[in-house]
Amino acid sequence: MNLGCTKNQVDAEIMLGTLAANGFELSADPDKAEVVIINTCGFIEEAKQESINTIIEHGELKKSGSCKVLIAAGCLAQRYQGDLLKELPELDGVVGTGEIGKIADICKKLLQPKKRHQRVFISQPPYLYDEMAPRIRLGHSHSAYVKIAEGCNRNCAFCAIPIMRGKQRSRPIESIVAEARQLAAEGVKELNLISQDTVNYGVDLGIRQGFTALLKQLVKVKGLRWIRPFYLYPQQVTDELIALYAGEETLAKYIDMPFQHINDAMLKRMHRLGGKADITALVEKFRSRIPGLTFRTAFIVGFPGETDEAFSELKAYVEEMAFDRMAAFLYSDEEGVPAEQMDGKVDRELMQERQNELLAVQEPIALAKGRALIGRTLEVLVDGAPEETEHLLEARHEGLAPEIDGVVYINDGVAKPGELVKVKITDATTYDLVGHIVDSPSSVPTVPRRAPAVLHR
Image (cartoon, rainbow, N blue to C red; front, top):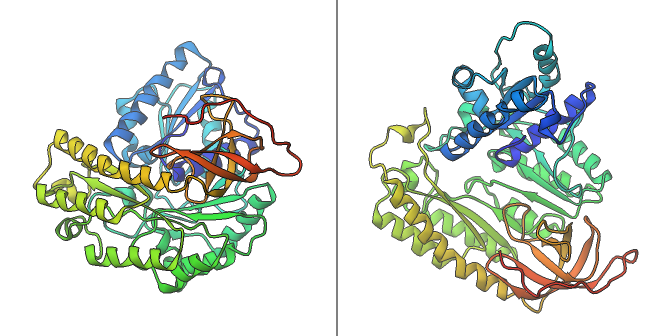
């Protein structure tokens, strides 16, 4: 079972591929599995608790199911190692982020008939997969995540990623391009580029403007429709990179750039580079040079020292800038990071109030932007039928990233998952759109589908 972010998902896919390549039979039913692996997340307190609860829940399978070996892998395992084994006796092994390529050998060792003995498989995380690594992808076959680097060199005061994932280690451009070609040959239309610090790609390899250099090669890969980078840091964005976004049709006109805060004093306490004026100038530059751009950002509320005035400034900024997408996260104390020792801690209840206020500011902005698309015809990538009903199709246009943004519900017309079709937008909710197909691939007939005009979420 995989928990946490898409970077964790890629690790899970590599583990699945490695196990299958080494003769293990994979099961979608934990009750029937002899080895159960929980790929944990340790980013914030809620994620840690979810990971621990999931381990405890699956530990019951040793009594009720076929489970002989229970393993905790991933970030929480990397960070807390022996503590997990001590507190969770149902665990047989703890596997860190630097050992995922050895998961098959680890499972074989833990399955050997002998007296039960808990074991830790942890090393510093130098592991970096390449295009030759076996991989079984999760999710839609037409959309894939590609991890271009691992680890982070930055020193954000709230973040424990460098502790869990180490310093930045970038994959060679040739390896990433080779993987992109493989994925395109398998029918992938959307390539989602992920890392902890995407704009900083290649700095450890000595590549000047490495991220721009990588994108220049990826846009040449035939068969891809959208290349969508995530987690851009505001600094180190060059005019050349912006021009590349503006000029290359394959590069999704979509920017995912978490700002974390906007008050200068808060940004300084967070150990973030730049300030409000720099951020505003950068957003305006992106918007002026890339027509139709979708801009997504994220903020942390309740960071130590956040005053009512600082939060009010953030709230006003969100209203003023009218971002297309915005996420608001609660600050979480993390062991070993600078913010843990800072004064001015904010009460949890107040944090939640501020989070709700910030989201309330964003909701009418998102709704207005959705309604502005009514009457337009957009190209969308079809994901398939939603879980709620078989009478609709879910799709996404260029400005909707998988999993984190809304969807386009198609209520008239038929298309297969992975196909690109034109949809006329007829209605909008806060985060989702509704429309009907105005053209279909020649191999698929268009037929009416019975469905409500709007599906509220």
